[in-house]
Image 1 (cartoon, rainbow, N blue to C red):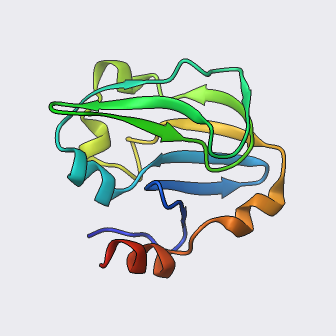
Image 2: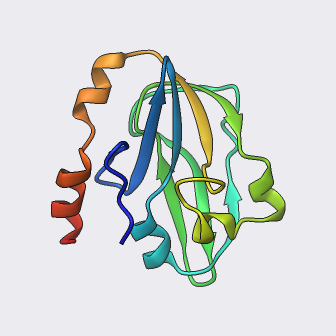
Length: 126
């Protein structure tokens, strides 16, 4: 299972890459495997400011729909539009082309509440 050491993680199986005051967010390799074939990603919160742990969208697989939770408070400034026509990128490249949103976060101290790769491995029993 792929769990990059340079990323942060949530208990809800999102990953976070922090670049300055922007966080790139997606779901983990573990999450996409658990969900199965992703058929649709919906984010209707573009240009909205949300609090940490609020639902920012949903991901739909063949047999289930799962909420996506924002790992850091802030404004959703970008959605990965390529997922509209090619949602399976979440399955094939969850940490690259399968990213979901970019967030201009407002509270850098929240980064400390995220899991390290080692903590996330322990959470999922990897």
